Image 1 (cartoon, helix red, strand yellow):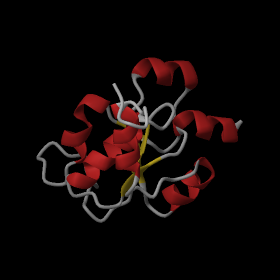
Image 2 (cartoon, one colour):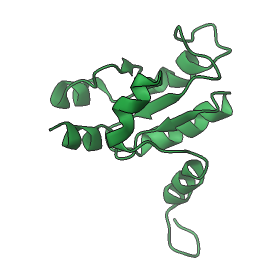
Image 3 (cartoon, rainbow, N blue to C red):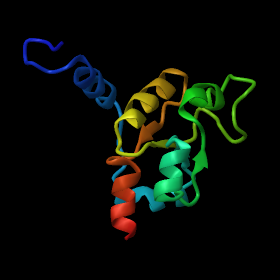
Image 4 (cartoon, rainbow, N blue to C red):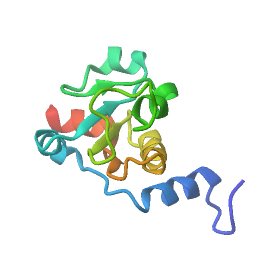
Length: 126
C-alpha cells in the first residue's frame, strides 16, 4: 500500500533513511578503508559463499548488527566508537541503508552504506 504518489511504504522509508547518509560509491571503498573506515559485511552466508568475501570487511550477521556496533553495548566489536566511520555493505545496497540509519540513531554519527552494495563493488573489482 503506497501514499498518494503510489510509492510503497518501504520506498518512502528507504528515501527517508538515505536523506542523511553520505553514501559511498563502490569506487571509493578502498580509499575509505585506507582512511580507517570499519567496513561491515551483513550479507548472509549463502551470498558470501556464492559471490565471495569482501576483503578487509568484518562480517556481522544482520540480526545482531545493532548489538555488535552500538558503542554503549557490552557486546560491541573491538574498535567501535562513535567517531569512527562505519560503512555497512549488503548485497545490493538496500538493507544496508536501513541499517546505517539505525546505527546513526545508536550514536555512530558517521555510519553510512555502500551504494549498490557488494554487487557494485564486485562489478568494479572484475
